[in-house]
Length: 386
Image 1: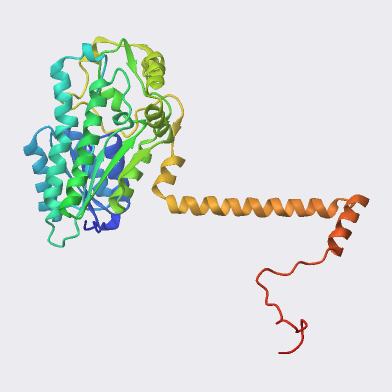
Image 2: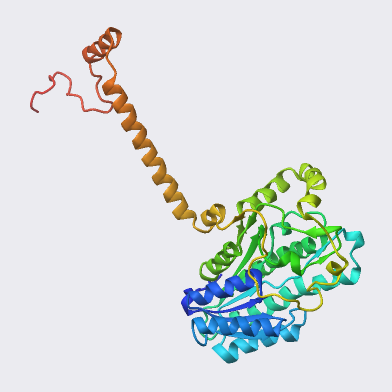
């Protein structure tokens, strides 16, 4: 395989779908702050334009908006065309747009489930194919990065978000198969799958809710910046998979090691962990982004409890060598400190008669000959010149 020669962020053009709120918006802002140019795609024209104006105020001519529904292949192709016409192409494509539904699978209308897959699965398929068509045929031959934003529940499903979990499982399988085929062809395209834990975004406010109470994120919850930093890291350094948040990584691992026990625990706890104490209203079934855009433009979802602004686990996963070096250094410092403390203890401790006798015996003990030491020839005394 030809390795993708990924550029520094300041030299890149990024395409980001689902860029009008949450993870997509956070990633776009952070990218422009680092000097990248961005093509922001979403359905909400008014909000998109306001965000692009804000980004261009930060650095002029560094952002452009495309009004697009990723469930339509023609719209996705228009995103790529805009990047080519405005910036001469793109270096990284981020598939991030998604919709969701809360409720038991048997109660969610089939047309809603089908619509969710049109956005969450087919939107990624269209974006991935179009991105690779562009990146594999770059005149300079350096390729680029394709980054798909999946989810921890694409590894371990949870109740009451069944169609969303299924779409993220599908994205995981699609991404893994696509990565192998790209490697077989020798195309210089890095393909990464990001797996966020619960993130404090407007996700639940955009979802269609069929539960009896208003939805909430199950803890632990992380800030959207944790995901944005992982995305931008993968835009510069090829990575296969990145879990964002140690809490989600632990759930995925336990689900793999103890699947039946995980089922039982989730059956008893997960519904309450995903609902507030506030009863749902009829409008919650109608006010959602499944078929049309709603008010957005916010990065955060106003989670009422503690939000982890960073993830030590993800930081360690993205920088394994630095983490190993830091761990080794900490171990050496701890060892040296222990030796110093032990030495001070020994120097300050009075020596008893038994220990004096032991030391004296050790001093009188003959020193054994070193293994492998040269011996004098037969008939010659040691130290006699040859």
